[in-house]
Image 1 (cartoon, rainbow, N blue to C red):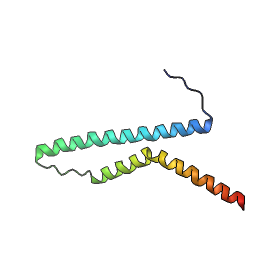
Image 2: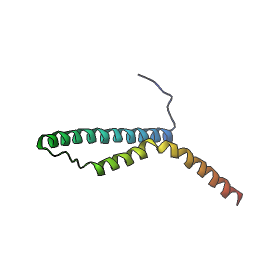
Image 3: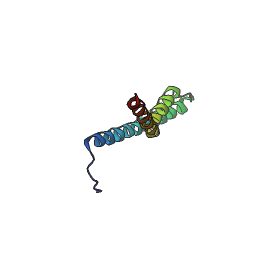
Image 4: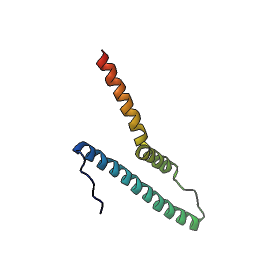
Length: 91
């Protein structure tokens, strides 16, 4: 087991939230694969292979972008926030 230095409560809450978001996406992706594999198997036996996955694929991609690309936007948010603080202080 790895031990880590305790984080301030705000950072601990953020870390737990981020891990929860990532685990939620992994569950979403796993269910997507299992359900669509079952649909493919059922469709292949009946001669019907048209899978109704278009909407779900889009949802999974958007969910993934929000979860996995969010840290890239955090730096931008912090820079914009710092600029706005400076602008307000100059007033």
